[in-house]
Image 1 (cartoon, helix red, strand yellow):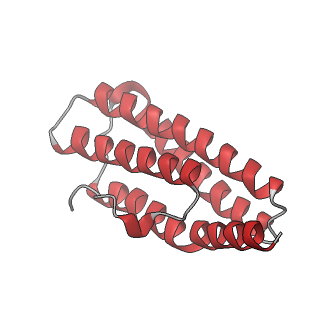
Image 2 (spheres, helix red, strand yellow):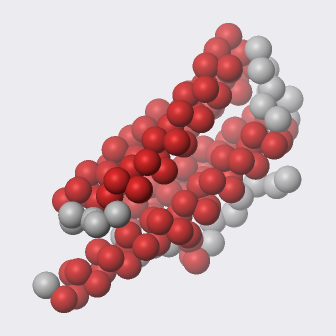
Length: 136
């Protein structure tokens, strides 16, 4: 497993969302780095809290945009976010007290989910917005 390198192919064409995605990728990489360097459990917990808080901020921001544009797949998109929120909540609770070293499998899951979500439903939403803005 290695750090996640941002590629322009991950851009969905909505700068506010793309910049938030880059921050999420950086936070996942921070978590990977803290874990792989054998940082104390408290450091891993602190990084995970930042990731959890920023994920909440990003999803709220994205969902506001979905609602603003009356995205027809709003409920499915929010359901994906909610599933990830629940996973993050569970992992965050497991890191309380700094007693956990996250497995590479867990960090791989965070990376994979994030990129698959960006390249899937987020890209689809980006295309929807661009189409709507050029045709309205």
